[in-house]
Length: 77
Image 1 (cartoon, rainbow, N blue to C red):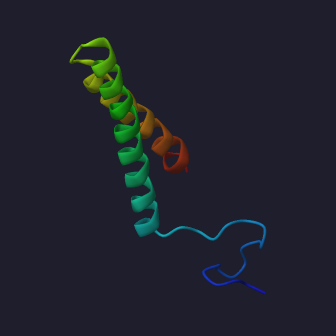
Image 2 (image 1 turned 30 degrees about the horizontal axis):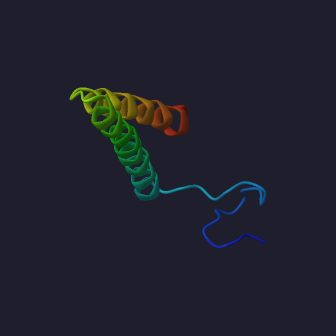
């Protein structure tokens, strides 16, 4: 018996294949979450330390980490 959204012949223990649309939204979510979280951490560190550059470093770090996660999840075929 195949479940909804499961292609015939796929074992029931594995999740159904994501379409490109769902994968794109998931990748966008990784990217936005990384930028917002680490950018926010940099902003808070800037306010605490009285500097003005840590938000940029946090956003670069978050963007890089998000791209790495996207590559690990979707880049390897």
